[in-house]
Image 1: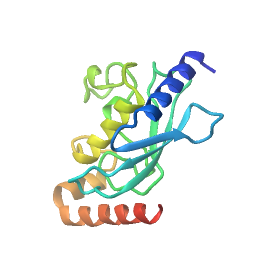
Image 2: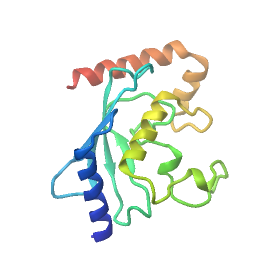
Image 3: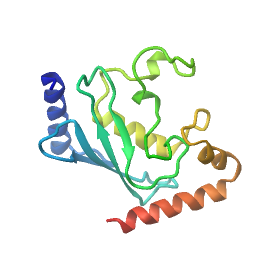
Length: 166
């Protein structure tokens, strides 16, 4: 177990407990494992996701912060940048360095300066404005572009379901 990663994650958790950030809450899935966090993202105001409470698991690698965590929604969510299994696909969660497909700049990908807070704020931003240029969920991206009413209905169902799970 990496002591650097443990210390850094403990500090970030302590900071978030002392100074909560609007839009999400975070804690450990199991008090014995600092590498797995449970997060709840509150649907951002003035978006289709407003009013929703979306749960996710954030899993950190042993070499954090040199490598990014993974974030997977456990709540149902319909979004172009979320795979059907719930995994979040945003640039800052991609491994550092050059993009093998040439789509992203190295500066858009993971760097060790990111924190749980910056990751969560990026996910909230993703909910506010999907990137349909490089979708993880092609069907959701296609609906977002071509059948906005159907897209909105699916998101509304996810929001309602997230409220029922409280």
